[in-house]
Image 1: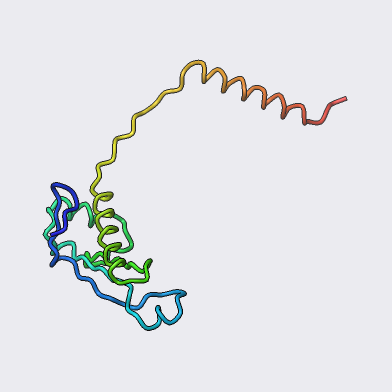
Image 2 (image 1 turned 120 degrees about the vertical axis):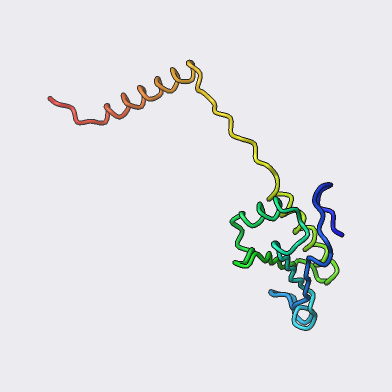
Length: 137
C-alpha cells in the first residue's frame, strides 16, 4: 500500500514495474545491467478514488497513453533499487500536483496614481518620438 496523501492511497498491485537497460553514458554498467525502471499505472483500473482518476486522466500529460496508462521511466541512478524508489517518489509527486486545487485568480485594479504615471510616461515617449520627425522649414 502506497500512501500518497492521507485520503489517497494506491495498492502495490496497481503499479507494474519492469527493469530495463538505461540509456546514455555509463559504459559497461549501462550496457550490461538492467538498472532503469519502467513504471506503469493503469489509471482506470487502479484503486484510486474516482474523482482522482478523472483529474489524472484529464491532465494533458504526454506520459498518459490513449488507454489511460501512465508510463514513467526512472534511470537517474546506477542501482535498480534507487531507481525504483525514485519512480515511486515521482509518481507520488505527479499525483499530488495533479490533484492540487488551483486558487482562482483575483482581479486587480490599477490605482489612479499608477494610471497617471503611465499616462505621463506615454506622453514623454510621444514627445521623444515626435522630435525624430523631419523639421519643416
